[in-house]
Amino acid sequence: MEMKNQIHLLDCIDGMEMMDAGSVDLIVTSPPYNIGLSYSVYDDTLTRSEYLDWMGEIAGAASRILSDEGSFFLNIGGTPKDPWIPIDVAMEFRKRGYILQNMIHWIKSIAIPRSDIGSYNQNISGDISVGHFKPINSKRYHNDCHEFIFHFTKTGTVPIDKLAIGVPYQDKSNIGRWKQATADRRDRGNTWFIPYETIQEKRPHPAVFPIGLPDLCIRDHGIDRCRLVLDPFMGIGSTAIACIRLGIDYIGFEIDASYREIASDHIQREMRRRGDPGPAEDSLLNRVV
Image (cartoon, rainbow, N blue to C red; front, side, top):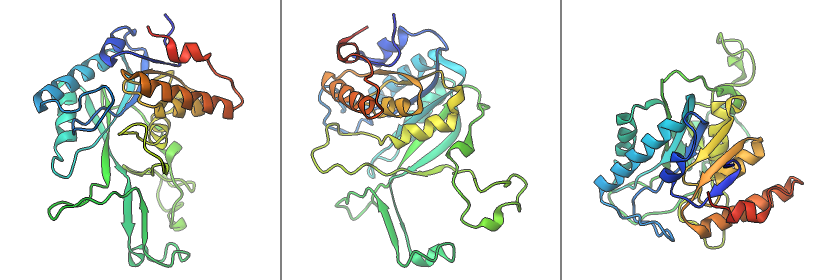
């Protein structure tokens, strides 16, 4: 049964059990963090042991369908009060045999005083404060301005296409100084500033990552080595949109019909923007495997 380029109204473990072993080259997803968010269907208030057991089941199901040279980019964060959540989840993946090949920090907000910028950019005249910032009312904790993106592989030796998401050198004198610096392009490193799109109205989903996040993950793994991308928690479609823009096949699972409908609308809009009518509405929205 054809599953590609569809968002299936299925629990992700059930869906992954229907897929062929080794059929996915890249998994990009952000599961619930178990912090009590108000999802429409899912209960985000499991006990810690229940939640971690579930994450372990997902890790195991995903390992079977992930190719030996595949990558699993897992975006997860905690809270200022409970920062152990992502570390605990990462340990469940470790128990299932995954290697943590890269630990990437998604920077959502950053502040840089002008005095720290130095002479690199004379066009900047003052302090910089950019990104999504939601103040918290606390005398104990700093605002949580980052989340983790854990890059798991089966071997720890999977090549990545670092320069595909590289950035220019600020100091051009570095070009030619280092053995590998033969052009004005360097490794972005493991701190990725990815801003949210500005949404003035009520958010349709309580925990959406920006399209730029799966886009960076896909290109970092290597577009030419991506036959198929899976998002087990597709939500309102960020990973699907990134795949469409990069010309890569995808599969998504989502248990909430309302989120899936929003994702379908986003996909149809993206297809129209590209001049491609895309799949028929009933195929994209109503088909359930």
